[in-house]
Length: 329
Image (cartoon, rainbow, N blue to C red; front, side):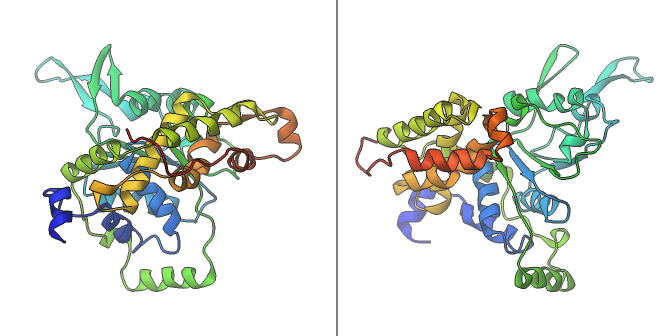
């Protein structure tokens, strides 16, 4: 590390890209998805991974949790799962005669919600407050979850039997929705060889701790965004609201999420914090995973086979890209 870099980063033991590199040791052939997951973490958002079984959704979630070196819990969502199974409950201690609160699995830094759409809407909604407010209210008493707090949820979009679609309000709580897809033959072979050589999540080494993650999240929130770039993000969201195929476009919360994610991506791609600033490329690269799942299409658009991703791509084409000039804030 050069002196200038050390001066800017202080006593941080690792760069954020180190997290990407370590996760990529077990999540092979998906560099873009790994980078998006780490970007989501640095932006202090939540991640929804939507894909068919066997594509590595849970592997990616576990790899992020393990490499981060923080406390993590996994919840397998099923139709009989209850809200108390997520948040925790108050129970009577027979010895003391006092009621004590027993924490649920959400009281962790990383929560892996596997097959989230298999639980009932009532159980799904138990995650809403904690995802948005980082608190859990049980018996009228709010309780704070640890920070950083990162929910990584997975769902299968194909097998819909016995599932409950996530409502728009809950989808909006996820900063990003990504898909992994199948590997090409060479990467699939590398996965098989990696398993034979012991390169699995169980053998992954933590490269970060909670304190470092908190520092990186704080630094990402301070990455500079020009007025011109902020206007670009606002204009992009406005185009989705006026789009003929959209019933409900990107909200102000979505625009804020896009800018927050752009800041995190800029930090991830530029280890010199002193010169890190978000660009139009950051906004364009993140528009699909940040905005698409928040759009509600018209019935006619769905009949015509128009997807949410198609609308965002069209909005990107229609929205003028700003130049690099502009004041920074």
